[in-house]
Image (spheres, rainbow, N blue to C red):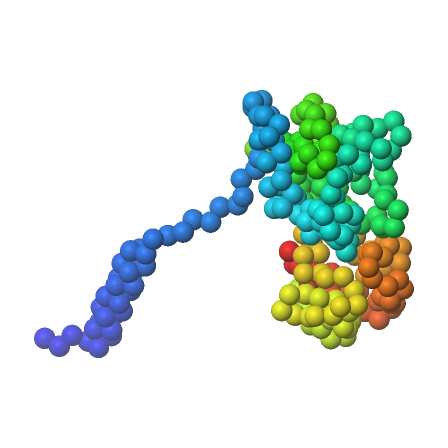
Length: 267
């Protein structure tokens, strides 16, 4: 009996698929997990452990070192060497820990001379530190020339989302724009690439590096900066008045939303 060609092809396809499935299942699988939240509430932690946790947050989730340096001047924000000691004298009537906590939760309350109000609230998106992480970060900052005496009770209970997902974090703003179209505008009509650096896309040096801008700035800041750059202040180390205030006239509404959507991908 002759077997129809279609049947032969179907059987052959099943054998091939089975072989690929067996091969794929034989490869060790790598599970990708988001970074774990730090939770210290109710735990017994020493000042040294707290400082160590805080230093890790400074370099990772807190994204602090994108703007701040320790022992050298950064281009966006003040050098933090010795900040634990300086914080005690920064604002009359405030202790070091009070000033540091305020600087993280309400960074616009007091501005260091020469620096614009560009720091976001670190307990809100895009950074979103929880109360334990804020506690550890303050301890680390205190350790830079000062005395570590911050307690969890010093951090407002309303700060951040409770560790472990027990609360509701503020929803991040999402735009209906097309990031790919926005990238084309960045390297084309909007000519952003002539002044700004974005990894593998642009290497301008006149304006600040935007490679991780969405990791350290809110969507609201980015949207406002495109339309009215002077009102948002100038990053130290860069000339004032260079960024044109005419993008609201140069770009259509769709182009503006596309450009911002692209900038929000830069994390």
